[in-house]
Length: 224
Image (cartoon, rainbow, N blue to C red; front, side, top):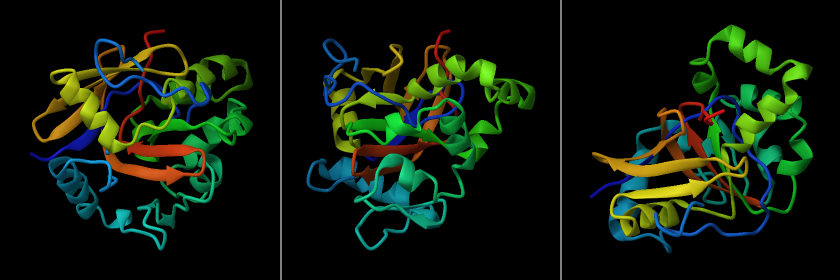
């Protein structure tokens, strides 16, 4: 069976901060808190490989990481230093700067970041996004961005395993304090946010020096 990662979305930027080091659990009950061959089952591995094959932009870079936004993502660089090179994440980078989360996301971590693309942000009404990017909305924007971050390093293998261990569903606690629920929908793995929104993981396991990024196609929205 093949697995592509899908994630539910919540409002606005996604490289999220904090909760250094503490690995979240791996199942629905005690765990609130998708493509490395050595760690994944053959089925999961095949699914992630298929996901990458469907997107030319994910061709492996020299170090084995997928390309993102037309740029090589180097495992020796941190989340911010890689993100600024992706032409598909200019809105996210601008949001991270507006929320003053740059230094946080350059921290030791590790962090798991569900990173929305520019197209994901385009789904948000322009007036809403413009308001979020204003200085007076910094706190609200930071809350949305950190809702895209899970403490610890959750690669594709561990996310898929958590779903399987949870009998088809797994809950992940975000740095913002809210939760994301992961489940399978057909051949996809889906994350649902607290408002019922869903987002697909289009590129999984983009390894960073301080964690891992999973690219998603919608912004995740917290309950409040």
